Length: 469
Ligand SMILES: *[C@@H]1O[C@H](CO)[C@@H](O)[C@H](O)[C@H]1NC(C)=O
Ligand SMILES: *[C@@H]1O[C@H](CO)[C@@H](O)[C@H](O)[C@H]1NC(C)=O
Ligand SMILES: *[C@@H]1O[C@H](CO)[C@@H](O)[C@H](O)[C@H]1NC(C)=O
Ligand SMILES: *[C@@H]1O[C@H](CO)[C@@H](O)[C@H](O)[C@H]1NC(C)=O
Ligand SMILES: *[C@@H]1O[C@H](CO)[C@@H](O)[C@H](O)[C@H]1NC(C)=O
Ligand SMILES: *[C@@H]1O[C@H](CO)[C@@H](O)[C@H](O)[C@H]1NC(C)=O
Image (cartoon, rainbow, N blue to C red; front, side):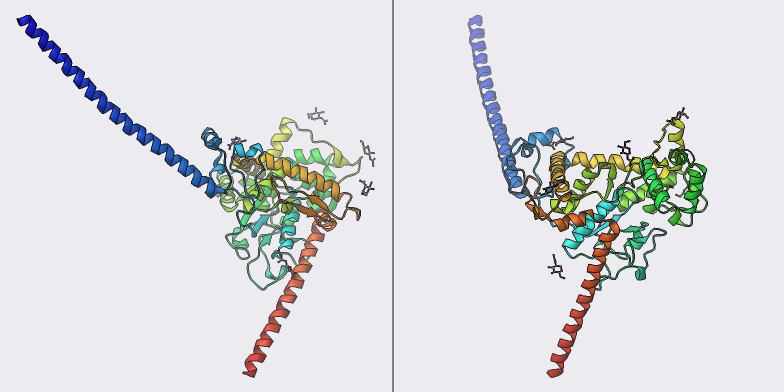
């Protein structure tokens, strides 16, 4: 009896557990359903966001793997911000990785302050900037004579520069030599103007400056060095740079072209110059200031990369940036002493480094920053290659621009709209610095004369009509 009772009791219990687990399962199932629902709506939300993003970015279909790619490649910050540039590659594989830059989506930057650093391919950049200004009637701050505003000090004398064509105070473009000083620059350029500089590997920059100035514009100091090292001025300079530039006569920057000139051009304070070469805190604060003042520091050893980077920052077109090299190394005679190769022993390198420490620190500070920028750009190498192919065509065409072929037609491509290069474009691209500056100067003077003639005419007309009434 007791046994049977136990049996029914246990059966009853078993039933209860079954029921309990059943209801537990039911609850669990309901919960799962809620989770499933939640997950599904999450997916739907992501899809909707994706569609919004796609239509927002550039009304282009961005293939879905884009997200997976981005996930894997968190360094690609550019993918997240709308890119400059015009057309996208038509159906090429660039799209699979990045939202493709769209040119024309952003207005081009028309105000640029370029710190023209001596012997760092800056004349080629200047040529690009001047042609950009000419094509748009922009106002360039130019010296009244020759091509240098002031290489002795940062001071910009209003009487030494060509007045603004429309009588305004603020200009659009600066690309002529002046020792950089933000305070002086801000009298002529709005804060919104892009600030760009270019630098070069310090030893090659200094040697280039040495050959250029010693053979063309030798100063007293350079003569002194040449007379001490007549047979091999290159190695003489690297081992005894102080023979070519005294470190005590710092007042005249006009004679200061082979002593950390890149830093000098960028506005280095020359107080106690010689001893300050060992002052780490001064070096650091100089670099910090440059980092704050400049939007972009280009590296002339990576010239095409620099130009593409510049273009992406300023949203310029391909035609704006094609170039022919100008003002390249002065060609010396075969038997010239200037053809001696630098003998780079450890002592030579360390001697020269101590001498040019500001320029070395400058270069070694901004080179990694430059590389980091390149790395964060999307499809950079595709654009670079396209640019180089176009440059090749332009060089070929311009080396033989005859009447037989009135212009070079560059067809629309992944990175450019169709454009033409005419013989007159070639002439401008190949023009020496002073010639091109002269062309722009004449144009601006003409514009100014016209502008004031027109204002006088309007004024007298107004005067007449108000006189009648
Ligand atoms: C990922 O980064 C590499 C360079 O680090 C770059 O070449 C590539 O285009 C990037 N991919 C995406 C999707 O941004
Ligand atoms: C520049 O100015 C000239 C005359 O002053 C004018 O004919 C030309 O259309 C202007 N160009 C642009 C792009 O505004
Ligand atoms: C180093 O430079 C800083 C200015 O940047 C100056 O205040 C300091 O006195 C200098 N130190 C020496 C030892 O000259
Ligand atoms: C200079 O040297 C190169 C090879 O070393 C030779 O081909 C060239 O003809 C020389 N030029 C002159 C002007 O001597
Ligand atoms: C370079 O310098 C080393 C050490 O002073 C010397 O032995 C060598 O001959 C030099 N080479 C040249 C090409 O001048
Ligand atoms: C320059 O172009 C003309 C006509 O197109 C051609 O006959 C000539 O061979 C070319 N010269 C060079 C150096 O390419």
